[in-house]
Structure formats: structure tokens, C-alpha cells
Length: 193
Image (cartoon, rainbow, N blue to C red; front, side):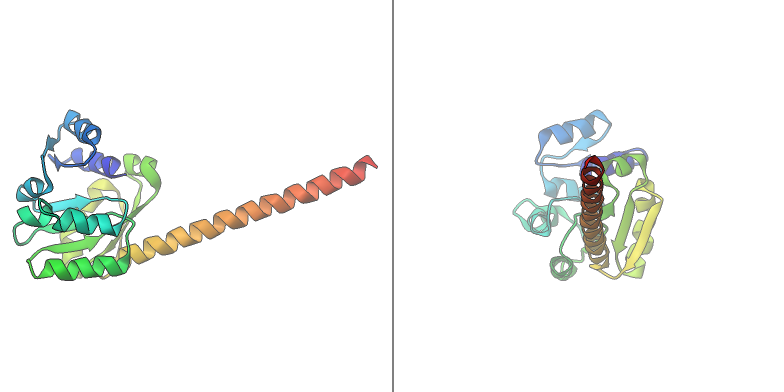
């Protein structure tokens, strides 16, 4: 997902990129990005850093590890966390970053890799008003479907609610299909005899 989102940004911005997966980095370099050897190096060149990682624990590590984002960040850096994360963990990270003069918002996405590539993915931002005003034009380079969900953590909450509704709907659909199949099978059995 991160590569697809970065590819959308690469259409309008020269990107610095870092990933543990060297093949992912090479694909972005082939598309015109510049590779960074470490996260602190990346942060030292940027005003805004986007993260899209598997979970909130990975976000904390990427930020605070020895050569993490914080090690190279200047005051005023804005971190955009596009992870499907834990709102409580995000709020904790935001508090830890605030003492360093670094802002972070949550902006998870919904719509899959194809939506990210097409620029139709939904982005649900949890940010203070001034942070959202700063990042909204950049998020709209990824997709026109950008929503300010509320304060820090609200984007993650909306994403989690969306995932819950989607999962429940999928289960209901399976139950409906199973019921229809059972009814059809029963009808077939009656019509044979």
C-alpha cells in the first residue's frame, strides 16, 4: 500500500524514500525518487514524512529507533501515519513527539491498492485544524477523497469502524448466500420426488 500511495505523490513531488524492502525502494528510484540509507537521513531532507506500516508498534519503532525518523528530524516536521493503527497508540506517540516540536497526524486509507493507484482511495485524517489545513493539499495529490475525521486518532477510529462494518457485511453476505443455496437445494430435492 505504501508504494502505491508514494507513487501517487511521485507524480507531483520529488520524493526521498526508505523501506526495509530494497526491491520496493528500487521500484520508487526507477520511477524518479531518491533513496535514503536510513530513516534519519530521510527525515533530515523532509518537511513531511509519510509512514504506511503494518501496525502502530512499527510506527513507534520507525520513529524512535536509533536511526529512526526522530534522530534526523528538525522541529516543525509533520509525520503522516497512514497505517491502519491503534488510536490510543497514535495519541501516545503524538504526545511523545510534541516535546520534540514534531507533529504527527493519522491518515489511514480505505480502497485497496487499486484505489491508491487510481487516486480514488479514501483518506480519513485525524488532525488538529491547522495540521489538516497544512496537509490537505498534499493528501489531495494522492486522492480527491480526503475527509477530516476529527482530532488526532479519529482517522484510525473511522478506519476501524469501517473495517468492522465491512467484516460484518461480508459475514452477512455469506450467511445470505448459504441460506439461498440451502433453500434452492431443498427445492431441488422436493422437485425430484
